[in-house]
Amino acid sequence: MAIAPDTKNWTWVVERACPECGFDASAVAFEEIPGLLRENASRWGAVLGRADVRIRPNDATWSPLEYAAHVRDVFRVFTGRFELMLAEDDPAFANWDQDATAIAERYDQQDPAVVNAELLAAAEDSATTLEAIPDAALTRTGRRSDGSVFTVESLARYFVHDPTHHFWDVTHA
Image (tube, rainbow, N blue to C red; front, side):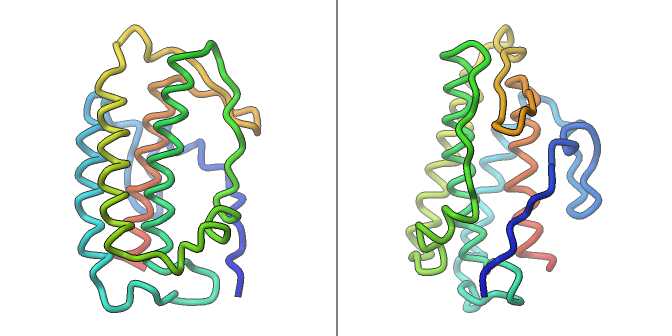
């Protein structure tokens, strides 16, 4: 059965704690985010080594493998968005249909060991990209296709919640 798309607007996570996973991005300093991304990425190996890594807990929820592949791609997409924000003035981000990507890239059929290696590399790229951003660039803006406007700093807070929340999804569901 197909997963129902998540159509919620999660932009509020930059302002207050998530009631589901408990992560409070508003309390995180920009300088802390690279370390949080690396820490998150380092934890996925244990999940990807589980015997049930390909099993969906129900018809409406991704398997741990699918979540991990998604998180890998989240790292990649957001690294690209930060690079775009630094290269252009107020760029519009291309829409990313996460559910279509999961199907097209066959997340459910990917090799867990490869996903883990790629997730670690993508997280390192994200962390390194963020570490290289000067303070003067934190207020640069970019826009999602739905019109939501982010600064580099607010996008980083929005971003760090995603892999954090998904790790919670696979360990507390």
